[in-house]
Each structure stands twice: as C-alpha cells, then as structure tokens.
Image 1: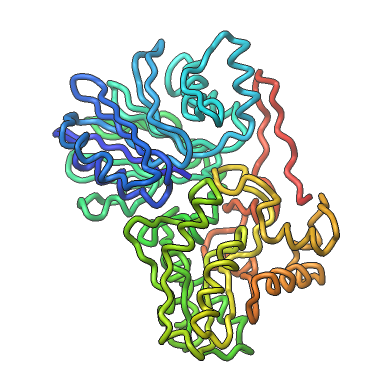
Image 2: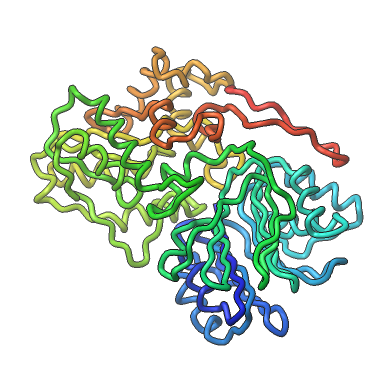
Length: 483
C-alpha cells in the first residue's frame, strides 16, 4: 500500500507536511510526491527507489510555502496527479488497488476521456481515480460514484482551494486517521506520524466517510458506515509498530501473535528466540515473554539504504535487499537452537536462500521458524502486494503435492486437515528448517482483537468482504471463492 499525509494550518504547513510524509516511508519504495497550496499549487514528484524521501525532497521542501498540502509515499505510480476540472483545479493522492482498472479505462474511453499519465505498466491508477471522481457534479458526489464503480479499494486525499477532502475506502481496507494541535489539522494513513509534532489523535475515519478539512476545522460530507473490512496484514506486517488502527496498536498485536505461537510450542526446546528484522521483532518478543526463552538478536538489519525486502516490485531488487540487509552474529548463533519468528512467509525464497543459509553457515544447531500468520493462499485484491498465485510458497507446495495446479484449495486452508499438514511439511523441507509452524487464523484474529467479520482475511481464506452492485459501467463483481 501507499502512505498518505495531509496538513492544514492557519500558518505555514510545509515542515509538518514534509516530515509527515517521510514517516510513511515504510509503506512504499517507488515514488514520493508532495504538493502545497499557497498562492497556487506547487507540486514535486521524485523516484525514491534508490534513495530516501528526505534526501530527494529536502531542497524542494526548503523552497515551498503554503498553509495546505498533501503528499504520498507511493508503492507504484507517480503521484500527486493535478487536474484542472469542472469544479476547479485540484491535486489527488491515493492508496489501494483497482482490480477492474482495464474495464474502467475502456469505460472512460467510450465517454471520450483520455489519459496523460501512462507508463509501461499502463494508465496511472491515481489519474484513473481522478477522472472517475470528475464524473460527479461535485467532488463529494464524484468520490461516492468512484466508490461504486471500482472493484478493489481506494482511500484518497484531494487538495483544493477549499481545503483537503479525505475519503476512506468504502469497506475500510486501508485506514485514514485525523490529528489536531491548536488550530492545525493533519490526516494520515499512519497515526505514528503525529506523535513527534504534538498532534493528538482525534478520530479514525469510518469506511466510506468523506470529510473536508480547512482552516475552520472538519466538516463531514458523508458519515460512512460500520461495514468495516480493514486489512489484517496491517497489524501483522505492513504497519509501523507505533501506529494504531481502529484504536489498536500494531506492536501490541505482534506481541500477542508471538505469545499465541509460544502457547502452541510446549514440545519445542530452544536456547534463543529471535525475530526477522524489523517486523518479526515484536512477534519474537511476545514469544520470548510467553515461553521464558531469552530473546536475542542473531541477525541484525543494516538499516541505512536497505528497506523492506517484501515491498519492492521486482524479484531482483527483493533478493538484493534480502542479501545485503541482514548480518549474522556468529557468537549468538553457533551451537544454539533458534526460534525464528517472522511476520509471514510469502514467496519463501528469501527465507530459504538468505536467512536460513546465514544461520546454517554460522553454526545454528536447530532452526524453528514461526510465521505470525497462516499460509498466504491468494494474491491480495485490495492493495498492491503479491500479484500472482504462483508466487506464493503455499501454492508451490500444493502444486508439488498434487502434481499440477488446482483451482479448489479449500482442503489446504483448514489447519486441522491432512492436506494442510502435508503442505506445511513440504514448505518445511523446502526451506530446510528443523520445524515450521504457522499461526492459526483464529489465534491471529484474537491477537488483533477485532471481530473476524470486521477484518479482511482474503489472502488467507479466499473469502471476500461484502459484495456491491456496480452502476452503469456494466462491470460486475465476480464472486470470491476459496478456489
């Protein structure tokens, strides 16, 4: 997912905007963008795939002035997009994923609408959203129409001369949160971006809620609904540890996950509990607290210049990051039985080719891998992450067991089934580890603390959230099945 941030102040907002965007750097690796409205819109976009947001935008930031602005750390396309529309000029940033993007492009073509932001990956998703919003009689109606037309998810910020419109995805897959300090307001994907500027968290936007933020405060344009399906992976992996979603802290959930893993591990004897840096760390701390086995750091992440190995879009870049960022400490590893907690196993290639080999080469006696979530079975339909079933370690295992690709994998989802056990055994042998045990989905949901029906669990179960009828685009939502 991408990370969004916006700021409105009676005074200049540029410093708050600059650092607020930077606090979302863990959510994307491709592009950064910011736009400030002073006398006019001033917009900057840079490729951040090989550098940090702060270094790329520092000179821009020093030259900007204005009391309203929005920005983004983007996981895919360049943003913000500027439009001179029938309801005036505006800039827009988005996060999410549009599954029926191609059909919506064709729909807009038939209406005589063209696109200017086109690359090798096709039409820019944020420009597509902007063109859909512009079909409304006003911005609020345009956002509501867009929500009806898309399959997937989209949360957004729109900067106009009237203020910042903030809209959370209709089923709340991705979060937006509001903060306030004196006469200044901020809106963000991640609440941790508020803390060091003294902003107090005021509210989480409801699914489908649309608000306008300006110098006078907040006005609600659409109240939204209770029909929430927030992405559970935010707590397990994606989110920053200090962030809160729906009032629930990320670090606390990860500790809960680790505790749950330890409770199922009474038969395992170990000398050291460790976490794969960074998102596996809190899971490991929870495991250590519950089990009494000491938490230590046999693998250290060399932070400068190396981000998350899951986030970059190319396998080559992911492998490079995985190779370079983790450094083994032989004295902690040699001769010890290790519990290694990770947030998840997605493709499995980095764990197998880099982490496990580093531990083996350093003399680990045993390696027990404990992912904090169940096996990932389906590519995400609502955010940009895994895009192919064949990428997933669980699907590779199923293909090897069955001798072919199969559509119906429901027998492998039940953690009590023989098929599930065969799948996990295959992944364990493929990774070359002593034991492998995944988190049960019930324990993961309990660790988060929301009712199961309030969470999107699609990538583990194949169960889709609520279905909605589409409007005159004639685009129909296909049923989501566990096959």
